[in-house]
Image 1: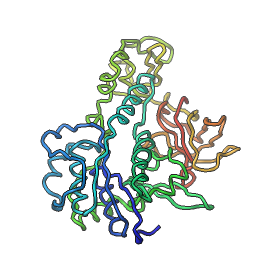
Image 2 (image 1 turned 120 degrees about the vertical axis):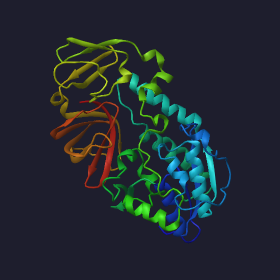
Image 3 (image 1 turned 60 degrees about the vertical axis):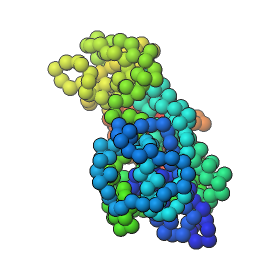
Image 4 (image 1 turned 90 degrees about the horizontal axis):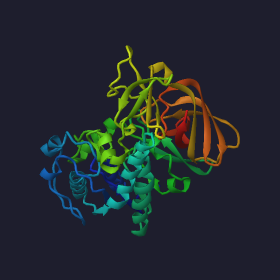
Length: 383
């Protein structure tokens, strides 16, 4: 798909280097580019010291890697007012229109999902939900209404056509691949999505930003959940669901009480720190039972499992009618492991790994690959 000919694309610009370079590349290729920023009502700690971004076309200005980027080095979000200011500055340098979309109400529902999952003893992945509902949902709807042919993001992922159908593939930079959080896309959506940096390494992306003088070329990675940049997830849950923090027992595998906790929303499978339990050897969270308000702990080698079940399965291939060999990734930082995936109902699968995997966590996504092609994925229910 070539840019010349006035093809229009809206780019989800977060203020980070990846989405900024995505917009720059498409602009260079001749697309008619418009930058869109999703305002979620999130404020970073230093927002009050930064210029606030408003709605409407961008202004011009900025210089390569100003000291402003250094002042924001502590912040690693993607949807605060200061992030909008960065995105606006990049759009101004590129000379493209830029608009801020108010998704606060929709984003509040994602935070509610996040809190509710922790209360259910599950560990949520809000980035998958945000991509599905907002970036490739509401934002894409806005783009279509504005006459755009494509929506683009700075994700490190790729698309191509195989056997006449669009496929989602890993990004070229194995260390930055983000295909895991995109498994919820539909094949028909892939035909209208562009991932301009998907074939680049992160070093290539930063070098392009420096070459064209983008003001965010030195900005640090956005690594945290944007509404919990301090990584205090329990605080977020407590603010939304304070009634969930009820004292209960911490038990070992035999059911013996070895301690007390102040709410299961404080924990996730595989957690070691903050348990307040001394058993003479390192112990980890092995299970969370919201019905009995019980946290079970065990030695690390007891956390491994060679199976999992997942529901809400979404296929990016024709749904298989027989078990398929695949590599399965059970969290973003997990190295996909060889397994057999068997569909057991319309939206459920059973996965059996060749080798046991550590800390299979309900609420996280299990994503299936063949080589670098995403076959599909679902939400882990149990091991």
